[in-house]
Length: 260
Ligand SMILES: [Zn+2]
Image (cartoon, rainbow, N blue to C red; front, side):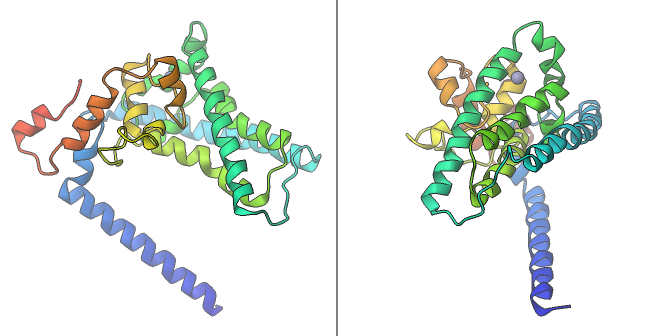
C-alpha cells in the first residue's frame, strides 16, 4: 500500500479513536446529560417510527432526487464550473444558497403548518416531540422534496463553482442533524451578540417540535425574528440549559427539566 494511503488510514483511526474517547468521556462526565434540551424526552416508540421513516426517506431521496439530479446533469441543466474560483466568489455563492434556502424553507414550513396540509404532510415529522439525530429523516416524501428540492433548483438556475458545490451539497444534511440533535452545545452568550443571535441553535428547533406553533426557521432565526414567530420561552430556556450543572444532585435533576 502506498505510504500516503497508510498515513490516511492512521489519521482516520486516530480521529475515530479520539472521537470515541471524547464521546465516552462526555457521557461519563455528564457533559451530554447536562446539555440535553429535553432531559426526559427520549421515547423508544418514537425512535422506532423514525428509524423506519429514515429507511424510506433515504430510498425515496436516492430514487427521486438522486435520479432527477443525475438527469439534469446529463442533460446539462445542471452545470458545475470546474475552473478555480476566488475565495470570495465561493463565499458569495454559498451565502446566496444559504440565504435563499432559509427563506424558501421558512415560508414553505409555515405553509405546511396550515390545515389540511399539516395533516397531509407535516404532521408525520411532528410525531417527534423531542428530536434526536434521526428525526431529521422522519419526513413525508413531499417534505423531502421541499427540503432537498431547493438545492437542485438553485444549482439548475445558477452554475456554481465546484468548490461552492462541495460546501452547498452537505449543508442541508449537516444543518438538519445539528438542529435535531436534541443537545445544546452553543455557548450561553449565543443569543446576546448582534451576529450569532441570527443563527439557529438546537434549542430553537427543539422548541419547534415541543411547542409546534413557533420557531419555523431552518438555518437562521431571521424570518422568525422579523415575523414575530420566535417562541417567548426560547431565550430563557436556552440560558436555563446552559446553566444546568454538569454534575447534578437529585434536587437539581428535578429542577433541571425546563418547561415540561
Ligand atoms: Zn414544523
